Length: 317
Image (cartoon, rainbow, N blue to C red; front, side, top):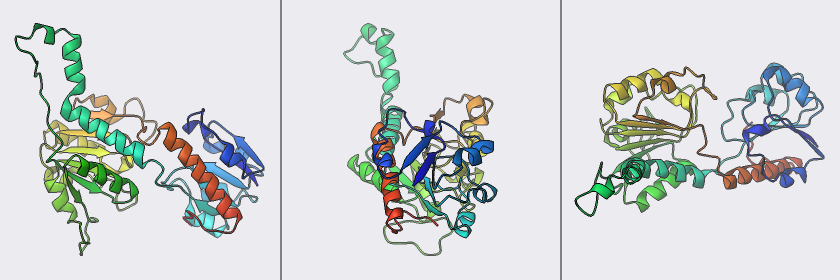
């Protein structure tokens, strides 16, 4: 089967594509693909690999040879699933590949925040320790993770891995039930109760019409003023203006964001332009260790093999 990768540049170029090359007859790589180039780049392809390139009903209807769309990510909001189903095009995604690297990112950020590593390194680099009258220079000090409570919003493979590591630090794990749920599943707690009690809130839920903008002024007002919000899921889960207001008004202490609602963001993005010391923003890299990227591509190859064998592995249609 002929395959095309529409946005291979979203991956490190040093990765091994052999597992995919072994299960397709030809793999055509495009670093990027603009909306106007999708049909041209995908002409005659039976399989499309896409990370973030959008595939609309109009586009799919112009690709009569297409049989399979492999989303090289977990989120599938860039594909018109209903249109694909109507046209007889299978859609697959991948999940679970990034749980180790994502959790490493989350706790690296938390440890840097609570242990004040950069501050203490800087104190020595600037000669302050050398001038100290005692054997240590406390500076801003440090705070233990042990005893802190972390609310996990979205308890799939990623949320579960965060919970495992949090427990290793002797933290209290609060597994939030879905917002507005009328019944609470075992070992979970009401969404708002988790929000109100948590020292740290970590987002791992998908972007849907129900979750878009769910973290807004109302929720920020319910959080502890010392709370830290971490988002490694989707940027659109957060209302940016409300977040900035909450930080400026000391309603919450800090936000650590690896995702924004528009990526790459414009230069004048409201959160980037704010240059707030309470905001830490990275460029959607929490998922992207070399090992996680390779595991993802290997899973894509497995999805293609399953499709060719008539199996429904990781099908989302």
